Length: 412
Image (cartoon, rainbow, N blue to C red; front, top):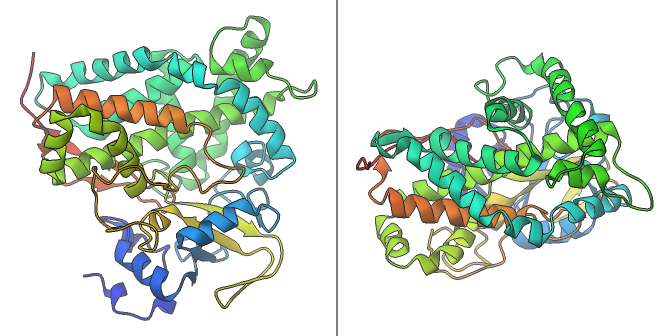
């Protein structure tokens, strides 16, 4: 049992990577929900940065998510570290780090690109991409679930939607990992190396934007390049950074939940068998996986005024972390909240946000991908089991594994 479970909660530092090494510190979050629902951590991993408040209860996170006037996404961005190697003004060109009215304009443009019809049209293509990934490992009898299936599928799905060739997938994944996985030295070996890579990314994306404006196709880049609100289109800079946001979200989100979901099923073989015997359960299973294993552990907001919450004095400019992996296990909302149970039925989890302006526009795509990935993996590699210790990404923001070695009976 981690020593932090027996110490005073006031001295717990949730930014200490040591307490996240094997799994998120669910027991600590349970104590915080019960005893200290607004908690201060010093952000010791980044000693030059100010600390942050943790918000851990389902209802509090929902109320904060609905109040953008008090809790800003734009003022400090969405991660707890102010300086991740990208100027804040550039970060604010992405809708995830904007407040109304600017965010509302961007969201309308995105809604034109992420229509249900556009997403549904990719169902067969997604299935083919999943099968292609499994084809690549089936005869080997072993693979890394994250790299060989998870990353392969998610990079090709979002790449096909954006209109990039398969040959570029690895480079685009590397760039997205460097941005959102900034805490992990495997993803960003040198913390200050991002701007040169970002310059390369601009050189990669801008010609594609120019080409799509002159010769539109059916991909998302074309849709965003030509979408208008009151006669305004996205600028070149907004297009490049929006491309980066879509690439990062499309890779890290679904890849993370897929890996955690398969890991949970291998640890609960009776539930894996249930899904194999009755695939109609998979849609509900996807929702339970999203509840238990949200891809992003938190999103940051910044206080725009002094606020008292649960007896704690939050000052204007303070950082707060909305911990979805805590709120999704809130005992006041879910029965047996800490248990993974694919028969639970659908619940109102917060894996895609907690309502308000920033609910994830890619939720339908993520659900479709996860459903297809689970269906095909369970059908084609039915006796998959762990072949070594999984390795989590070193990150507070990313709730994901970077390696999950597995084995299975080889098939031709």
